[in-house]
Length: 306
Image (cartoon, rainbow, N blue to C red; front, side, top):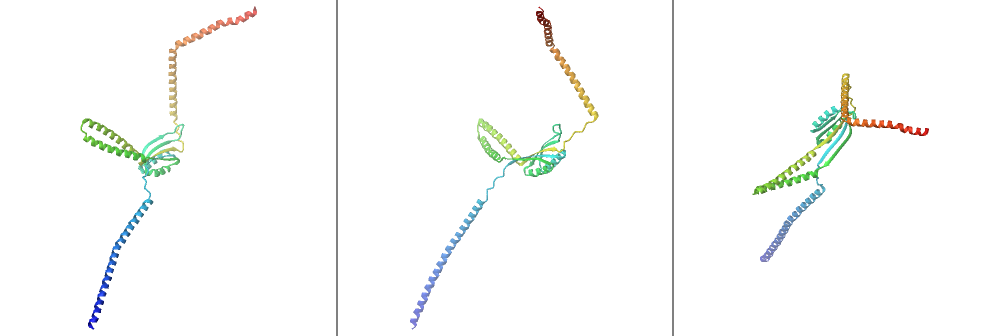
């Protein structure tokens, strides 16, 4: 009885152990498979995130417009004003120039004349480009605006061209300097030096033109024309001044007349021979006519009497 009951128990334990090992190995293999697949899933997610980011960046780049360079403009303005007092307006313009950090280029004042009895003035000023509009607004408040004009010229291409030429010439200058340092004979040195001098002269010319354009872009020019609203009349001079002016004019006229007569006498003296010949010819012709005219008139009468 003992033996018969012992073998079944050991067999049952052995079978259960085998089953447990199989289950453990299957669980372990399933865990390994899940551990291997997890990194692949994580890697795929990171790749998807990177691709999504690249797509968003590309979309943003396509949506964002390309920033263009600012146009390089040379601005010139002209404004004409009718003011009550030209002198006071000129002083006000000087104050505006100082406030806007500008420069006075030219000033021309013209006093009243017969053809234009009004007092006029022309002012040229240079203002920083960003202060052009405020300056024009301040100038317009000084009087009545008769005309206003603003012109602009884009010189961006010229600036780029000058800059490119200047860069190339500077490189050429550096290469010529290296060649000059390596040159051995005096003839080669003189030839390279002459070429280097020409290149430097061209560089200075282009650099001056470039700076001039940049200065014109940075500063705008305004031409201001002023005209008085009421014509100004000059005051009447005193009686003494009028008498003195009349005496001066009369004496001047008398002296001019006397000099004219003297000149005429000199001309007559010089041409007197020709005048005498002419007078003699006229006198001879008239005398000949008198002597021959009676014979011509008596001839018909004599024929009638006969």
